[in-house]
Length: 204
Image (cartoon, rainbow, N blue to C red; front, side, top):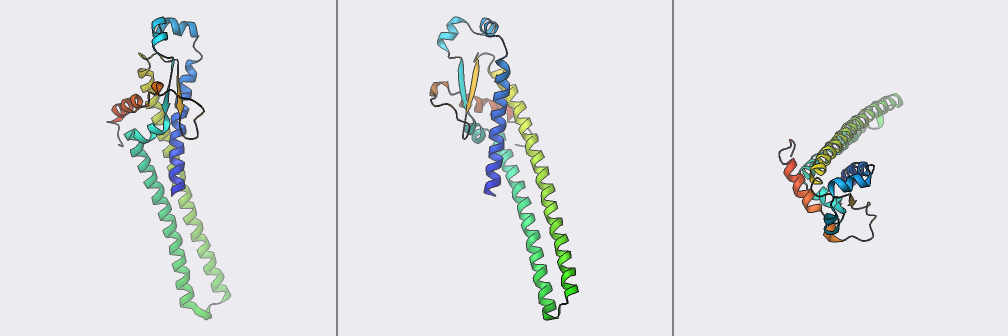
């Protein structure tokens, strides 16, 4: 269960990181002179750095919609694991009851038949878990796409009057900056803005 939770957190963090890369990598294809002439004046260049960064871990932990959805996905994962474990406990109980009922009088034919039945039931339990896990994975991917869309829309609006040329990301396993000036940290603004944007989204 702990590994499943860590996997879900990693998926969410990678989803957010991919979004930032995609949004602002697209901006790098825009000719620099045109962007500067249109959006950034010389005075703005001297007063505002053209770069900022966002802490992905903070987004993951402080955006209410993400926290709510993560708990939902973790609960579904736990339910899948519990169902699978209950299935195996049921097989174990069935085996013990069979041995207790037959005792030393069990024939080889009966033993082989019972073993085949248990194997078939075990395969059914495993297949049920596999199908449920696949559905959960698809649900997680759909959530990633949903978050990416909301973040892309928000950042497009957010940067209209900020005029950042680049917004970098930092987070566990994704931190490639050896030094960060905390004055360039816009995480709180993004968290507050995303919480406002997503407060009425279904599923919170």
